[in-house]
Image 1 (spheres, rainbow, N blue to C red):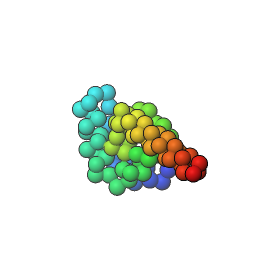
Image 2 (cartoon, rainbow, N blue to C red; image 1 turned 60 degrees about the vertical axis):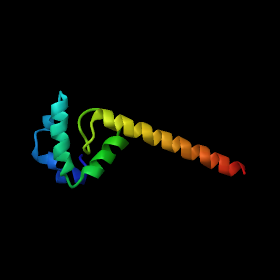
Image 3 (cartoon, rainbow, N blue to C red; image 1 turned 90 degrees about the vertical axis):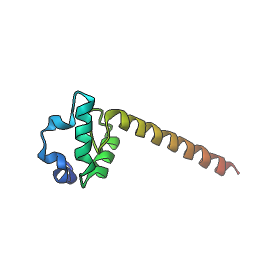
Length: 89
């Protein structure tokens, strides 16, 4: 069952292969569609939360999503360290 926002996405009117390209040019085409999409933020968050490895989601390629997840992990670790230090005072 798909989340309600998916039906509102511009991708709903495109062939699925548009968002699962085999080359960089295809990625750019998909990202241009996503840039105009009203649900781009929710789409990206869905892909990050569900660790979707393939395709363009929320205007982000697979590599970009990996980088975002890594940055989020580092931020969470930093916040946890700061919280631990504060609790020790």
